[in-house]
Length: 152
Image (cartoon, rainbow, N blue to C red; front, side, top):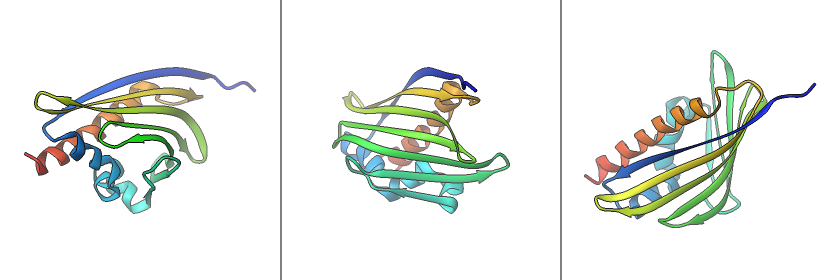
C-alpha cells in the first residue's frame, strides 16, 4: 500500500511592539511559551521543552478525535534572531505531517518583525498547510497579545 505524501509550505508574519530580546524570550522561556503554545488542554495532558540546539519539545492533548502529539527537535538557535527546528504531528500514534520551521526576528520601526516559515510533508489524510497555518496563526496571535500586553 502506497500512502500519498504532499509537500507544502506557508509563511506567517507578525509585528510586535516588544524588542527582539523580549520576543525571543517568549519562545525560550518554558513558562512563557507554555502559555501561548501549549494552551490549557495541552498543559493538562503534557508539555515539556528543552530549548537548546539538540533539545526536544513535546506536547500532547486529547479530544473527541483522539490523542494528538507534537514532537520537536531544535537545530539552530541564535538568541534574539533565529530559531530553526523540525517537528512531527501525530494523531492516535500515526504521524500525519513532518515540518521544518524557521523563525526570524528582525528589528522593525515599531519593535520586532517575526517571520514564521514552515515547509511540510503531509502524510496521508490531514488538513495540510491550510489547517497548520490557521493553527499557527492563532498561536502566534496569542503570543503577540501576551508579549505586547506585558511590554505596552
